[in-house]
Image (cartoon, rainbow, N blue to C red; front, side, top):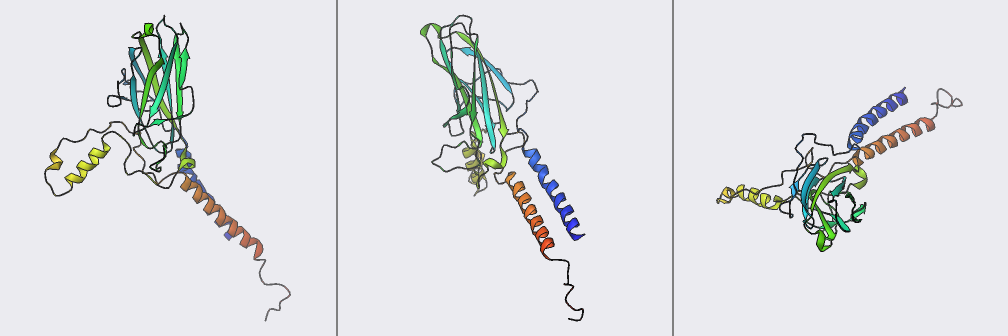
Length: 275
């Protein structure tokens, strides 16, 4: 009876622990569906157009322009960026390239995907994609690991004939991500996500809580207005904690079962009652 109760309690705990794990395994990005997707792109890192994950952003420009967008990516996510460039009816061979930079403006390598493609003469469009490495909550200063914060997308042509310079083009860009979870968890986290203006904002907050010398009256820093739907994670929680709990429950069950099998049926029959 005790063994049955122990198994029942363990299964209940197992079910409660598995619930957040199932929630963490779902994709973190979803289309906005509000009809407010951006219709233009920036021309530099500072003017990059902000987009949410799942939004289909569009823009028009001229061949030879640099087109910039930015989107947020949090720890545990593996971002993927898709881009489609619609070319004019008449053009020569062109080579287009899609680059992704993190919040420190370090170019991030793609795990896979067609980051650079060449469109032959007369090709109506060219499609590019870049699947980044999983965003880490923390990394060594010398490492080039992707970290939580704002990511920049740059789309441009790298191989162009002079006769094609200035021809009209249109582009579509979409960024989404897959949640990897505890498999990519690390022991540590950044103090703040790498978003534009975060360092200046932190300094102003410290000055405002200080001696009151008037620093708090300065114009506040303008932070990036985009962030993940559920906010920036603290970095300490992941579904690795869930699997650790499951392992502890299974170890307890193994101990209970081993004890039940080895303790025997009680007092040996060969021992006299009065002994």
